[in-house]
Image (tube, rainbow, N blue to C red; front, side, top):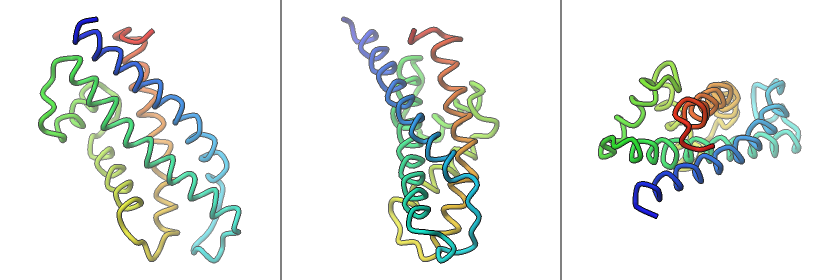
Length: 154
């Protein structure tokens, strides 16, 4: 197997990983999307656990999408991957997302979830709920491009 075939294999493996993670993200989203709350005190322990699971799955999905799938796709299509912003801009050019700034916002939200102690976690949970449909649509568009349009992974 030559290096190009290995990259293609890695792309397909990363896409499969994203697909499996997306299934869990969708399940969590369907559970949480109707929660109404203005503060953490409005949530039951079960709801809080569900929102934490959604947030974790959202973070993992954005990581896999950007740092595994999009990056490997760029490598396979012989694009320069030195500038991470260019990876996001190309996602917009390929039609995966309307505006690459949304990917930046989702990545920033992921960073906030992972790296910061958040005092008002309820507002962050609301953002995760708001951004999840956009992330799911971006993932679907990415999968369609790789599997159906380019037929890299069948």
